[in-house]
Length: 254
Image (cartoon, helix red, strand yellow):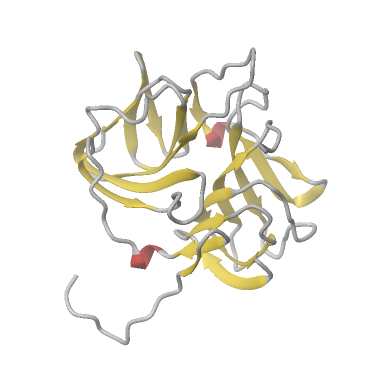
C-alpha cells in the first residue's frame, strides 16, 4: 500500500453496542482458518456488540474453504455473492452462484465455497447461533436476488424490498434487499428490538444512526444495534440499495 499520501483520516464511526459505519478503505485482512487464497475482513461481531458475525471476502483465483464453514448444531450461515461466480455447497447439495446469488445453510449443515472465476469473486458472509423453536426446523435455501421481484415497502412506490428467505417461523432471521429511489426515504425513524448488519450495494445516502445523520455510499458496512434510531434517504442519481440481516420470528428472552 505504501506511504500515506495525505493526513490520516477515516469516515468510519464505531459506537460499540450501538452502531457502526465501516468504510472499505479502512479494512484490514483477517486470517480465518480454513479459507485459502482469500482476502477476508471481519465486519460485525460480538466484539462490536452484534449477536452475529459478518465478513466481506475476496476469493482470488483458486480461492476456497475446503474445510467448510460453520456446520455446528446450533449455528446457521448465509452467503451473498456480490461479484463473480462461485460453487456453493450445502452438505451434499452443490449450487453455482453468480452475482446476487445466495445460499442459506441451517444449523448442522456445513457450507463450502469455491471460486470459479479466473479472477476475483466477492462475497458477503454471515453466521449466527440459531434460536430453536419447538416443532420447527429451517432448511437449505438458495436463489438469485435478481430473479425475485421487488414489492413496495410500507405502501411507498419509491422504496422497494425483497425477501431472500422464507417468512416461515422455522427461520429465526431473514435477509432482505432494501432499495430507495433517489430522494426516497424511510416513512419514519425506526426504533426496534431487532439488529441489522447491512452491506451497501449501490448509491449514496444519509443514514440516521442514534439520531446522527451520517453520509453513506456503496461499499460501506453498517451495524445497527437493538433500539438504535435508524432511517435513511437516498441522494445522487441511482438507487441506494443494501442487503441486510434481520432477526425475526422469536420472542425476546428473559
